[in-house]
Structures are given as C-alpha cells and as structure tokens.
Image 1: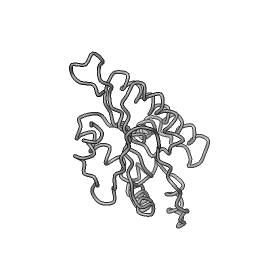
Image 2: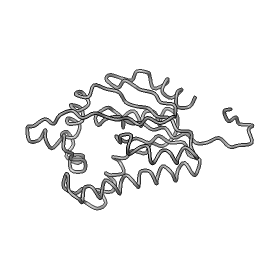
Image 3: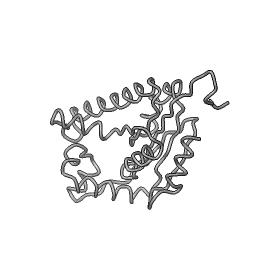
Image 4: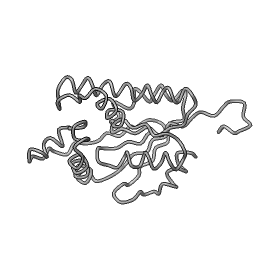
Length: 195
C-alpha cells in the first residue's frame, strides 16, 4: 500500500537512478529530471571533477593512480547518496556504471529508499560519437575524464563498441530513448519516478 500523508509510516525518499552508456545523455537528463521534480542531482562525473579540481591530479589513463581515484569517487558517490537518503531527501543519482557496480550499492539502499531506474537508451555508435565530441570540446573535461575511447580517438584509432549491461534489479525501471529529445517526455518520466 502506498504511503499517504495521513499514514503513520513516513514515506521513503525516492532514489532515482539515471544510467546508460557514456555519451547517452545521462547527465543532461538527470539535471532536467531533478529540476522537474524538485530535488538534487548527484552526478558521479561531477564528484570526480570536484576531486581533481582540488588535488590537481586525475592520474594517467589506465594507471594505478587513476584506478584509486575512480574507486574513491565511486565510494564517495554512494556515501553521498546514502547520507541524503538517510535524511529523507529524494534525489537523482547519475553514473555510467554497469550492473556489477550498481547492484551491490543499490541493494542495501532499498531499505531506506524507493528506488526507480531510468536507463538512457541510444544507438551505441551514436553514444560513442557524442562521448568523444563532448570530451574533445572541453580541455578541462578531457583532463579529468580521459578514457580509452577518447584516447584512441586522439590517436586516430577506434576501439570496438562494448556492450552496456544496465542495472537489472527488481525495481520499477524505464528505458528512455535519448536519440533526440526524450521519448517518453520529461513530464512522463517524472510521472514514472514519482508514481
């Protein structure tokens, strides 16, 4: 039975996960959705940018330092989410994690939040094209997020397209086509995550 304002049990905050492959439009959708429903958006890449802007070091692509930074950001991302949820704050959480990274962190949060997943769906080749163009257009972003796909593009190579294994948990999940605009619309996505 859904919680109502007169119910003796306070309603759980919503944890709205926005995910998909790099270049699928996750961050843009996460911020638009957070604005539409009135809550914060916690974005993994923005946390990493804040860390690198503090330390001045993103680590060389593929290095142990880069891996340590990535793991620190991963833990900080979920600690931030858990803190806000424990204070009963509904939020949008956005990252390109695959199932194996989302699942172990989302499962325990289901005890304190009503979890909904929104998966950005797009042709993988188009997502890669957008990912590379976005990173190459921003020297600051390139410094923080240089990854093998972008590194290969800088060297005139193209890596094979990799599959994306979206989180598949027993929670309400919605696929959103992010090729052009959003299908379904932001209003319909907001209705889904709040419904």
